[in-house]
Image (cartoon, rainbow, N blue to C red):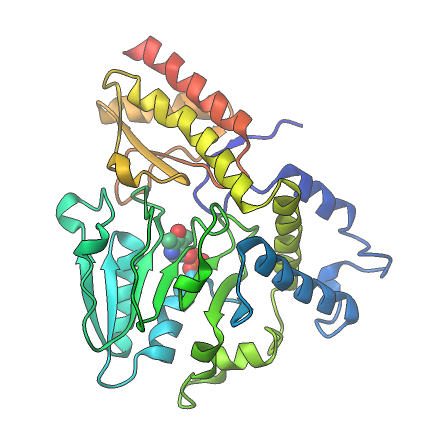
Length: 361
Ligand SMILES: *Cc1c(COP(=O)(O)O)cnc(C)c1O
């Protein structure tokens, strides 16, 4: 078997050890005579999976006691709507930090629900950097401040987060959750679809301060109220049981690797190989994001001509690389280097970049 050098942006690489373990347990989960997908979500075996997944998230991410860990469906895109539905009450404004395509989608959904404004924007710089903390202006009547910790398409990442006092800080961490240590207590809500750093698609993690979860308005449908899911420990309706189970295996893998701080170190080592190949190319390759906001999850770069970029993608595919074409909205090239992407893939890519330059530079 040859595994691809998988640089997909999402769904993305899952650790081989995890896939193998799931394969072993696929037909008969813990002697039940059936797979995890075939059993009741009210069974003891599944309840253990549900509880252990939440406990592992708490442990690995350092989630304080006064927060709920929810496992929901609908992806981060559903959170774009749920957040304003739950928090954007009359007379208040949702404040959004505009840093690219995902932030824009979040703002657009909020505007359907209530009053939402831009608290800072880097559009003038083509979203190739994150705003500095002093550029972010939170209105007096803000219901919350929303930001995207890592912009998956542009390849930019916040390296520090604003202090927002009594205004809850909400972060879309879909593309960098559990890739580095975070002080969760600075945030009101953190949310992320699983399919980049946590496992397969189908489950969305929402970490929410208890007082915020309890305050969902009673006028919105049950499925869209955080309170509903908090009260039922994320078992209000049938959960995406297989995705949750897979996420549990990924979390156990992270723990075995030494936890989030260790992964952060790995991610630095991995991305350095590729950023160095860009920076030491004498201009053959150029990084898209401004250096102070370079993402450790999505490395965006260009070659002098689009012709060469096309050739780069084509030749890389022949060599076993997958997912290096940039997002269709921005073009160029992108290597997504999430937690599960091994060092060997990054070494292979950096070598390929050197060879490609030698042939074409
Ligand atoms: C992928 C991504 C999303 C979209 O997630 P879905 O689970 O597909 O809804 C939202 N925000 C960010 C930052 C992403 O990377």
